[in-house]
Image 1 (cartoon, rainbow, N blue to C red):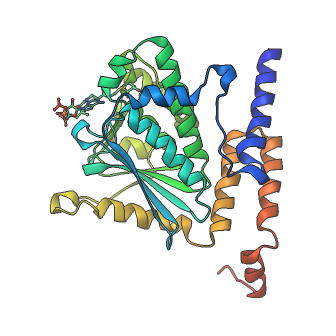
Image 2: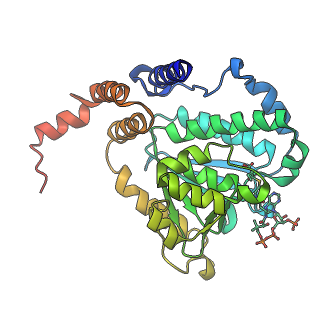
Length: 312
Ligand SMILES: CC[C@H](C(=O)O)C(=O)SCCNC(=O)CCNC(=O)[C@H](O)C(C)(C)COP(=O)(O)OP(=O)(O)OC[C@H]1O[C@@H](n2cnc3c(N)ncnc32)[C@H](O)[C@@H]1OP(=O)(O)O
């Protein structure tokens, strides 16, 4: 009991100091340390032995939106080891992108992501390597979720296994009409290990989470909306018309509602939500105070005051 309380206190302090407190939000901070057996360089080297695919990042300076594309279409965008390393590198890039406001995470060629590349999984199916991959991906996806960017997973086609977990690391999920999110882990004799279970419980509550994991249920857009896993359903038809970018454009338009305005204000909004999501109330309030201090009397605030803004 005492040990649990200490772990919670240490975690709270860690979040406040490392990624959520005012002076160091943008600093790269890891979820695990050497004390947990987390040796990132050793893990990267191991993962790079499983090549294939890419994780592409496109940042748009004018809009402040970035698009992260999981790109391995011949394997339904499964994550090779090299792609796991690339994902972490892209997250590092986004951590340093101070002008960013929004992020869309998608898969190439009309499908989201079919999880880990099973060829790599078979080769590292011993417990030691599994733990290393688990810590590495938890760390990368936790840092992705904590980015001061409003993020949305654009789910087309299938989001399976690790792909379903990736979708939960975004603030929102948009689904195309025929898409499916499925935590297939049970069928693989597994549970999520990329942080997907912990995030799923926070998104849909423990009972729905247990239904999705225990039943490996296929979540279509209707079910997704009903349980709060999906935040919107995109319009029918675009890819059949030979226009692969249509879903992306719809997602950009959807996201722009939440990213319109000065970067420092949008980023501050995401930061107070991140601290509220992760920290106990007292620490979240302190973190909120720190963020408030970064916008109070700031350029956007003074402009609004000078303009006698009315909210009609
Ligand atoms: C469980 C958690 C774990 C983790 O957390 O790390 C994982 O994520 S394990 C991976 C979980 N995902 C799967 O088990 C996916 C298995 N694949 C399928 O169910 C199907 O392939 C599907 C539904 C994704 C697509 O079916 P469809 O009929 O449309 O296409 P194909 O089956 O012909 O697939 C095309 C091609 O892609 C290869 N593929 C698909 N997914 C993976 C994957 N995860 N790893 C490696 N390769 C994958 C599939 O084998 C086909 O290749 P081919 O050479 O043509 O056989």
